[in-house]
Image 1 (cartoon, rainbow, N blue to C red):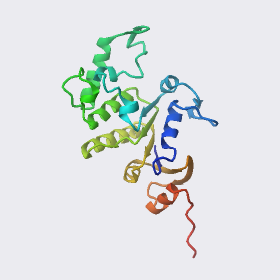
Image 2 (image 1 turned 135 degrees about the horizontal axis):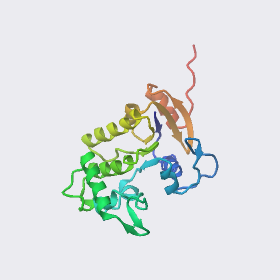
Image 3 (image 1 turned 90 degrees about the vertical axis):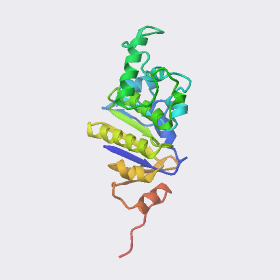
Length: 224
């Protein structure tokens, strides 16, 4: 399923995503993937068990802008034996073959895989991030603000890829400040306010109910 997390920005969305992927350590609780507790594990361990991450800021956390497309295509997997012959010795030909395949598969518009990521449009940068994160067939995809700053065509592309993940039997955690995006994609919706879940809703719940949850309140039943 796609679980949508709705909330006004600044209410713990980034902290939630970064805790799940290992960039922050949780103070308590468990995070389970296939029954395995990954809470407090390193990012590499969490990725190894099948968690992929589309960060809310592709420039800050998704890409290294002054590196080439082929270098960015292997980030997070550079120590994988298929791409590293020995510690610090990368198999460049295999990495470039990976990059060429991803660029073609996800229709990343670029002159070549040797150009810097900074030369791409925002939509093509996000396609590159998606291509890299989905290449590993994740069990769980964490998508944080996945369409921020994109044009309509790029938004439709990202939405389709997220829906395809669900269709393939994978879990998606969609964190978005755009309620239209939550409604378009989510099978179940929770609202987040000041770092806590304030409600759980069906995907066709009225916007006013979602709005109350996003503001931290509880909707009172209407008197008969």
